[in-house]
Structure formats: structure tokens, C-alpha cells
Image (cartoon, rainbow, N blue to C red; front, side, top):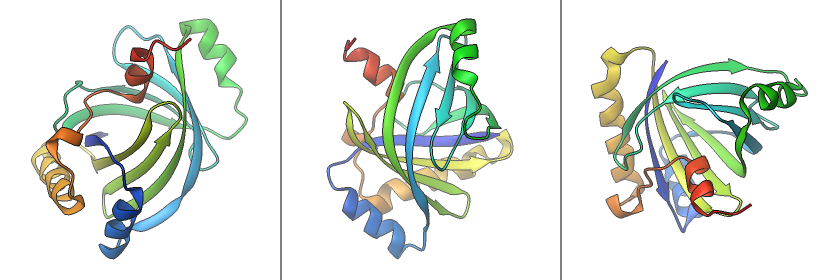
Length: 171
């Protein structure tokens, strides 16, 4: 799978929510997520545990503020899978990120309105495709949604939540 994604800091999640709903996006629930990031020599490996989404995700993407291509592999898991001890022993834990995530979809575009413990409020836009031949279309969708949501370039965040959290240097 491939996607083009953007993350931006926000101060008014209600406005983002209202715009998405007015545009016909479908609400898919509020997920209380715990993402455990593991040490990984290439790319990022995280285990997501939530009340909506549970999965093991490996991905590679650049840390740039503009819309970026992310290649990923995702394995859906059942709740209570018990993978944390195994992966912790194999790779070591890099950081744990806790967040509340509102999930919306509009066609092939997924939106997250996040409240990340210790970091603040964000919106993520992910235009999802099957193969690299769709990248131009996916980039265009992200740019259109940035404009629609009124997000400025100054709000864009290049880093993953794990990198942002580690930069805080909090034990």
C-alpha cells in the first residue's frame, strides 16, 4: 500500500470537524490509542492498540512538512494479542505515544483529529492508494484538503509523533 500524508498542528478541532462533516466525510469513531514504537534500523515499527484499530505497522517515509509518500505494511490484530512483550524483547521499545483519535473517511482519504498526550492537537490527512502509479492523484487530494481545511504551511509538522515525543526528552 502507499499513501500521501500530512500532519498539522491545530487549535480549533471543532472547525476541522465541521468542515469534514459538511463535505460529507463519514465519522468512524473515537479511538483511544496506545502506539508502542520499537527500535527499527530501517523505517518505523509500531504496535497500535486501541478500541477501534489494532495493528502492527511498518512504514518508511521522509520527515518533511509537505505532503509525503509513505510506503507501509499493516497487519490487523485482534485485541488482547499479547505482542508487546515479544516485540519489546526482540527490538526494544523506543517510545510509547498515547492519543485520542477521531477517525473520518471521505472516499479514499482518511482524516484523524488527534489529541496527543504531551504534544497537543493535530489533524492528519492520508490519501490512500494501492500502488505508486497513483501518487500524483494522492498528492493532489492532500493539497485540496489542506486548502479546504484552511491549513497553512506554518502549521505543517514534519515529524512523527514518536520523534516529536522523543525530542521533548521526557523520561
